[in-house]
Structure formats: C-alpha cells, structure tokens
Amino acid sequence: MKFLCTTIFFLCVQVALAQNQQTNNISGVVTDKEDSSPVQFAYLYLKNYPDFSALADERGEFKFFFPSQFMDEIVVISSIGYQKLELPVSSLSKTGNIIGLQRQLLSLNEVTVMPEDHSMEEMISHAIDNIPKNYPDKRHQLKGFYRKVSTNYEEFTKLVEAAVVVEDVSYLKEGSALRVKLESLRQSDELGEVDSTMTILKQRIREQIKSTGSALGPSNEIIGTYQHNGFRGDAYNSKTWFGKDGDRFMGIPELPTYRRFMGEEIIGNDTIYQIAISTKDPPNGSSYLKINSRNHAIVEYQIGYLSGEYQTFAKFREVDGVYYPEMISIKELRLINRDVGTHQMDISTFWFDMPMTEDLKKIRAKDALGRDEEVEFNDYELDSSFWKAYDLIKKHPLDSAIIRSLEKNKSLEQQFKRNAKD
Image (cartoon, rainbow, N blue to C red; front, side, top):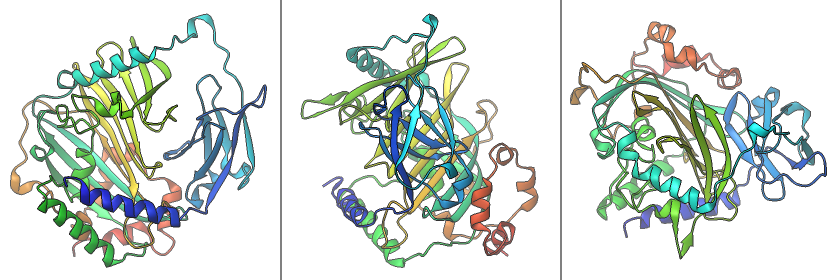
C-alpha cells in the first residue's frame, strides 16, 4: 500500500499522455557522414537553454519539442566519437531532417579505454558507499537563486523567482532537518488555464498517502526542488536510487540494470567517467552518473522517468574535499488542468553560491518557509531594489525568448507588482 496512491496517479497520467501527444516538434535522423549509418543515442539540446533536449533512438531517429519562441536558437547535436555540430533551429524543417555528424579523429593521447561492465558496477558501488564521506556531514548554509518557468511548448505561461538561504545539516539526515529562509520572491501572472479540479485531486492523493503511513514530500516547491537531490538524506535508504543496496543502479535478477560507458573528461588532475544506466539495453543516456575516479564522488547526475517527462539533474562543486550542490534542476509535468500532456511542463532550477560553514547565524524556525506552504498562492512584498542588486540573477539572466512570451500583454515588472503584497 505504501506507494499505491502514487502509482495509480502516475498510471492515470500515462494514459493521459497517450491521449495528448505533442504536435509542435521537429524530427529526423542523425547519421554518420561517412557511411550514412545511424548514430545511436545522439543528444540534441538548445545551446542557450539546455533544459530543452532530446535523445535519438537506436535507429538515430529523434523528435525534438520546444517552445516556438526558440526558433531563433541554436540546436547542438553531440555523440561520443563524433564532432559536436551546431545548427540554427530555423534551418531545420518540421520533419525529415537528416543530420550528418563527422567522426572525431583521436590522437594517441586521446584514446579512451572503456571500462568493462563489472568495472562500471564496482565504480558505482564505491560511489554510493562513499556518499557519507564525500558530502556534508556538518551544518552549512548556501545562498541560492530559485527559478521556475512553466511552458506549454507554444509559449511560456508562468515565472517564479526567489532568493533564498538554505541551511542544511548532515546528508545522512532526512530532508525534514533542513530549513529555507526566503529573502525575496516575485512571480508573473498565470497565463495557463488553471482548473481547480486538479488542485483538489492532488490534495486528496496527498491525504490518501498520508493515511497509509507513508512519508509525504513537501508541498513547498522551493524546498521540494532542493530536497529532490537524489542522495540528500537517502544514502542508507535501500528504496531510493542511491540506497546502500544499490538495487536501482545494480539491478536484481527480476529487473536487471544495464550500463553503458559514455565517455570521460579531464578536469584539473581528475578523470571524470560518465556512465549511462537504464533498465533497457542499451541505455539511451537519459539517466547517467558522472564519477570522479580519484575519490568516487558523484559530481553530476541525471535521472529520467517515464519517457523524459520527469527529469532530475544535479551538479556539485568540491570545497575543501567536500562536495556541495552547485545546481539542481527538476523537469516535470505541469498538472494544472485536465488537459494533461507532455506539452505542459514545469522546469525548476536552483543555482547556488559558495557554501558557508563557519560562524553561521542559524535560521530560526519562525523565519523558515513552511514545508506545506505553497508559495505561489501567497503574496510577498516586492523589493525591486533587491532584485536590481542581486548577484546571482546577474549570473543567470532570464532568456529573452521567455521574456517576450511572458510580456505579450504586460511587462514583467508590472506583473511582479500586481502579484505582490500591496
């Protein structure tokens, strides 16, 4: 019964997905320029907005969905063993594109030795075992910039931005131990069609899960995005991706897991291996780990669910031998009305500054966000001067295509004021 309600809910979503296929797309095939053979599992993404991406299948065929505002963008096509190719989206037709990749010529010192499958399994096992050693076990704070953009793949329909301070403790403790202080929040108008029926449905599902004794994740999407970091507090929970038993990555006889070496990169004096993982053979790369061979630290990972409708990404930076989150991103279906389909998406992203570990002024409980507080339904004071001086937003400016889409009726500054407390 533990996950029954959630399972039923996702089954309903999958049925709806089958009935609501996207129509705004470009498609084609990626091939080898020399012999026209298909390039399996080539990766396509928008150069300046990589949250929008696609993977070719084993026949090199792909379908790529993105908002129409990005028709002036550049699409990047990459695959191991081939030169990366950049093309204007406007140069591609809606269907029938044939994209040829040039083979990468390797010099002797660039030859990569691919690990055997048992070596990859051993590397992942060591990485999971070393989570308690490689990630924080003491109180620390992170200044973070949170942004959520919503899209229906024709246009962007909502923007939420927040400046926060995250106070966390040991990665071995559950997520309920962390606190998040909101420094400022602003949000645009809602351009999507919101149906209260979905709000009621989600609340009833949460109540049913709670009645079974199962743990509920936070309703607060800011806390939820941070806590979604896959091994944050889950290093010894065998039911998670990063659990000590490793069933999700290692597989079991009834449900084997397949691994594929995707390449390596040299960063400083460290060699970083990228390993794709899937219950399908061969893995297509939508789920992968990047592991530092020096200390078996997981420096980056991505986990995809369903057919890519759900995706978790996290990247870490090393500070004094300990790894702290640098970026966390969650891509998921936007369930705001009964028109459920992969065209409605939420993309929530955190960017973090360098961690603070000494002389911390602890976040008091009364100043912390509530875990059950849905911040989008609350009014907050708008501090325009704060946002003009905020360093993190200067490092991660909003894409002009999103601005154009959201400002078709009113400027964002006007919307921020309208949705703020008087």
